[in-house]
Length: 272
Image (tube, rainbow, N blue to C red):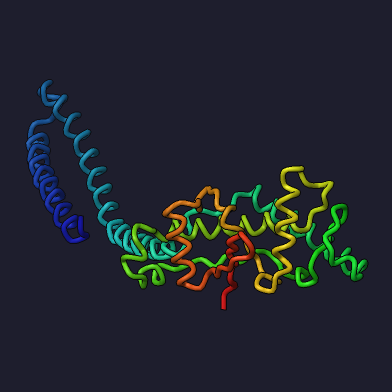
């Protein structure tokens, strides 16, 4: 209800009460003409009238307070609507999926491990260290300072700029969640490249050797990457939707692709 309409309704209510008060006042005058002590019935009427006068006065005070509060409430509603609009605009650019706390902790541990291995490589840099020994960790020199995989999310403007054929049924949340998955794949691969054989399960050692062959290629040196076969969710999978997401991200410059041997390698690009 608008402030003016609420004020008009309150004025009507107050006028009604004032009319009732006038009638009560007339009864009071009649009461004074005939003292309550002379007529037993008037004594009960006198008590009821006094009680009603107090109630009416209390109601009038309450209505006055409510009337004065209407402008303040209206301003508060307007401020709330403005804040709601700002939050809705901000939510458009926020991805619906963020790595949980455990994932972030694992990421920090992986970075510490990579930095420690990089120091070891510098201290033992020889021609033979460039070969991937099965018992020792060997990192390419460009690995130093690479940091975490980039999380270069797309915006709603970029998504809307695509043709309807390319965009299909993809949403901003789906694409940005897939970018989170890509960063996780690249982080896991970096861990495999850096880890020694003793720290890896037997079924992972073969993949680690394959990744160590790939990382020496000029196309991926110093870059974060993952393999097409790594796409196992939770948001990015090797299905039609996953392939559509790769097409969109390649078009928007978020990834590049190359083929090394039998492996399709997806490289994460950094923001310009």
